[in-house]
Length: 241
Image (cartoon, rainbow, N blue to C red; front, side, top):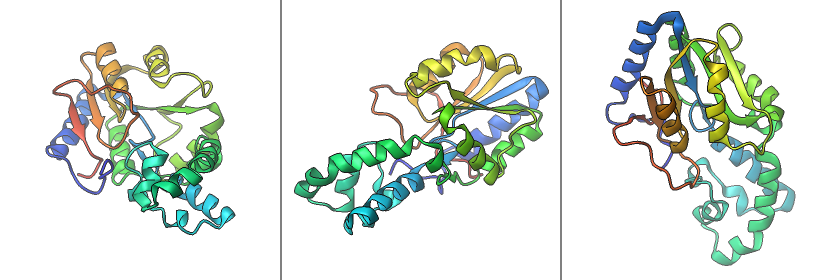
């Protein structure tokens, strides 16, 4: 399963301790750059909500059987098959499901259904307590800011004093290019020394841009781009210590 936030990957406790130690050594001059979807937030409840809404509207009881564990990648076709639907049934409803998902998933109204990753809020609060400036750097765009801020506050993530949310200016902007370009703004807050992201192209870009930083790949799910994290990069499945 791609998501396994209730378990620890080998060495996870040590990696998280190393992050906090790095934060303490840098003090107020250090900046931690952290992704949201698939990193601090589990997006599967958002997806379940969308699928079940459509199921209720159409009377599709078979689609209503959707559970979080059925989302193993970003393929809607695979997700429908994971429910146990036949190939014929998948073909019948796929386009309608995809259209409803597309118009709903990337909106401020639906991000509020996300759940914080277990241990995530405590970990970010501990980072901030070390003096670290927190930057939430997300591929969500400006139209999703309100719902994102609501979710951050709901789960107790620091926001406001030395904790900043940076979103894309628009949906069309490529996530990795945006995150690379955001480094200019991030450096105005201090020295970027910690990065956590679940997208291989992003963590590789961070490592290239900030070779002295501690870059950690969060093993949940990611886009189907044929990119893998650099060899030897630290990894965690979540934030349980």
